[in-house]
Image 1 (cartoon, rainbow, N blue to C red):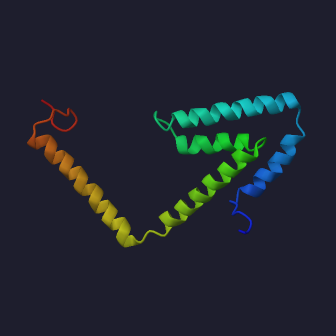
Image 2: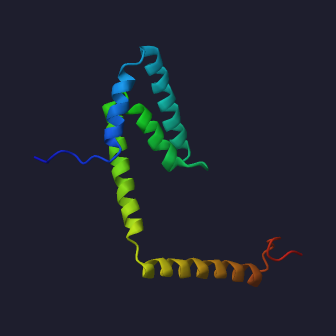
Image 3: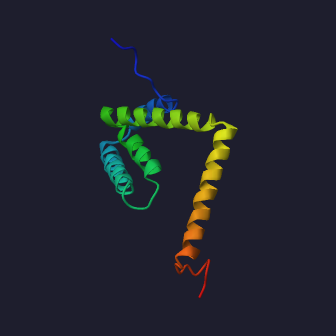
Length: 128
C-alpha cells in the first residue's frame, strides 16, 4: 500500500478556494465549470496551434478542479511535474549551460552558412 499521494504547494490554496467556491450559487458554479471546460479545450487546441498551452491547460484544470476530483488529480500531477522540471532547470551546471549556448551558436552559424552556400533568399540577411 502506498502512502498519501504527493501534492504540489498550490494544493492547499486550491482547497481554500474550493471551500469558497462551494458556497456560491449553482448557476455561478455551472457557468464557472463551462468556462473551465472552454479554457481547457482552448489550451488543448494550443498544443497544435500557436499559443501558451502549457500555461492555459493548468488554468482550465484549476477551474475544473473546483468541481471535479479527476481534474484536481490531473492538476496535482501537472504541477508536481512542473515543479520537478523547474528544480532540474535550476540545477543545471554552468558547464551544461555553456555547452547549450555553444550548440545554439553552432546551429545558428550553420543556418547562416547554408543560406549563403545555397544562395537562399532571406531579405534580412542577403537582400538582392
